[in-house]
View 1: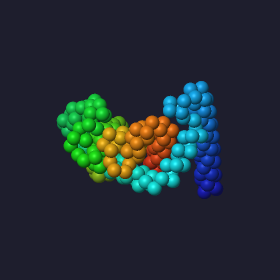
View 2: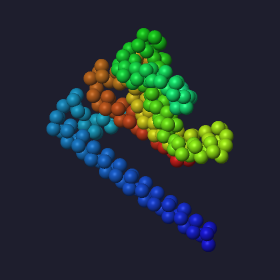
View 3: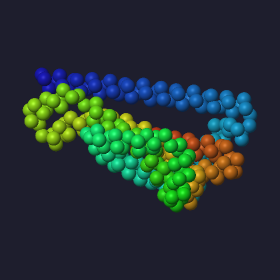
Amino acid sequence: MPQRLLEGSFQMKASILKNKNIKELIYTILSIVALLILWKVLSTVVDKEILIPSPEITFSEILRIFNSPSFVTSVLNTLRRALIGFIIALGAGVSLGMIGGFSKTIYYLLRPIILINKAVPTMAIILLALIWLESERAPILVGFVVIFPVIYESVVQGIRNVDMKLVEMMEMYNISWFDKLKDLYIPSIRSYLFGAMSAAMGLNLKIIIAAEVLSQPRVSIGTHFQIERANLNTAGVFAWSIITILLAAILEQTIEIFKNNN
């Protein structure tokens, strides 16, 4: 009987989750349809393709981009830079965040660096990266500098928001530091970290592409943005923007899947 009740509970939860996912999908589709209608109306009212291209022309540009020989290489190069910057920021943010979360001295020592990092304009970071590094590596530095504080602060918050009563209880029962870290701190950090990772991944991709627009690496999404702008091909800019949105959505969804499986 208990096993049947447990199976019934799992089936009910799966059914609720399935219905929730279907509703989210329907709302997402409705939102996209509404945006497309609004886009079409605006392009018709403005009636100037150089300002607001129509959805049809933009989607034809997307097909042209997909069929271009440099498309795959451009996307892979940009994704490679985004992932390298993200992994470095994740490693540094988690390690320093844990140190800063457990040690107030380290936290206050790092605080001015984090505040400066957050306050410096992104454009200034891009320009400095271009001065310090070659065009192929400058976007990686920019991505790292921008998203590192996001990761770092999420880890610090995860540690500082642990219930102190649970900490005191573990100390009372002489629970080892390793067990406290594994069973108490890491679950708290994980809940904050995955949300920050999801936000940071999309932000990182946008920042990397912005840096590529200025640094002009040989083959990249940012370079294509600059080419379309120079040719006054607004539809091409719109097309690459949609491609970027899709890439960001795929990356964020990947993190969500990893989060749900852990």
